[in-house]
Amino acid sequence: MMQISDSYCQKNSLFNAMNRFIGAVNNMDQTVMVPSLIRDVPLDEEKETTITSASNGPTTYFSEGDMYSYYVLLKSIRTDMEWGVRHAEERRKDKYGVISQETSRNEAEGEEEDLEKIFRFHLSGLQTVLSKLTGKANTLTNRYKQEIGIGSWGY
Image 1 (cartoon, rainbow, N blue to C red):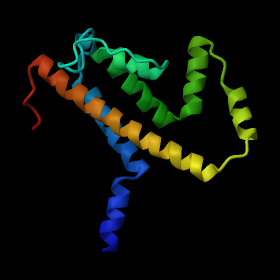
Image 2: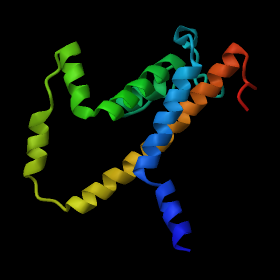
Image 3: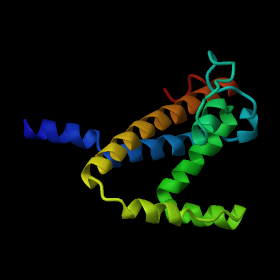
């Protein structure tokens, strides 16, 4: 009984969610041989219209993008996960001259809060987002195969 419980918990661990996401993006990257073919192609055939989001940031970019935008975003997130956030901030700073957000981090460190509660909240959110991103990477891979006419390959 303990092994079943342990394997269930391990299956839903953050580490496994990250591995599933990175594996799905690697599969997508290997499948999409010519990324320029997926420019201006909507990811979901049913959702030909653009979805408007009230929030700013990655959600807006992610919901309004074509397959190529998803492809670039998913690869960027994978790189950030593999190399770390600090490395990504340094890359952006070098590329765009963006100043790091150290001041907001220092302000957050000064606040006294329940760290365990905050950790569990962010962990849950991260696992949810990783699950959705993994689904998007798999959808993009399958849609690319449909677009180039190899939809039944690899099954």
